[in-house]
Image (cartoon, rainbow, N blue to C red; front, side, top):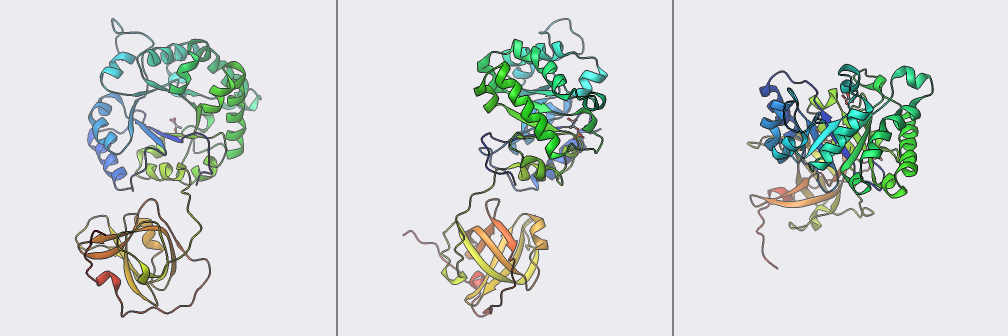
Length: 381
Ligand code: PEP
């Protein structure tokens, strides 16, 4: 998990010229939907499908809290510019973000630093937010020119952007040698370069802009390597290519969230649970391993207990099933107590922390008092 950080994390998925069919794009969103929702106040998430797909999947994507982002926009306005999409046309189509300067645009389609700066200016003028991608080639890194290249790419952008518009810009630092290669930059390499980008902005724009601007890292980010990267103070999120074409992209989002601040746990006895409470810490033994709840898709249930009784725990995150093995001692922090059809449930939602207790605890479990099987009636107090 990310440590406490001054800037709101931002994670984006660049689908590039993928997937092949609209059906596959829709299926991918269906997979994202199976993950617990994230709190939009805590993280910004965007995705960049290719243009015809973008217009079709924009609404379902936004329902998941994911903003629509174009992969590119024109440096020119409307008119005789075959093949181009202007920034105002994107805005008119209710697209709020655009990516500019992706290395594939620069290296495969000859876009210059100046082109990228012009696109940035047009996008800002049209009211879009802009992700400006920069980053060095392998031989430039090997020649020790990384910072020089990033500064060269940013300079024309700085010259064209008004100070007050920097709040609408995100920088995606993407070393070209790490894009699509499986060769991710080490957290130290990414941190060092992104700190240098911030220092350059402090000099070339202002300390305030440098402090506030969000800098993503991009290049072979996966759910496995993102947690170490996001710990670095100058990495404010990710621009993700290949791994954004999988359901597990949502794991990258989850791992980029700021940590949930929990109060010091004061674990409760099941018996003491009030069926209208949130923020409970429960320490119990798993008495029935997790399985999918009868008749409810995507909800899993396990039974836990202590010497005072038993209660059902329910959750949507399938990964938790692995923890709920019979006999395991579990610590469930910040769980919500919910009534479901008159029965009490401990609800492990995205706010809760759920783990196997570190030490082996010996305590007895009373099977007589199955709290989850007790019908409760909620009364106004
Ligand atoms: C990208 O295309 O911006 C990118 C970072 O790709 P990948 O994550 O596949 O390296």
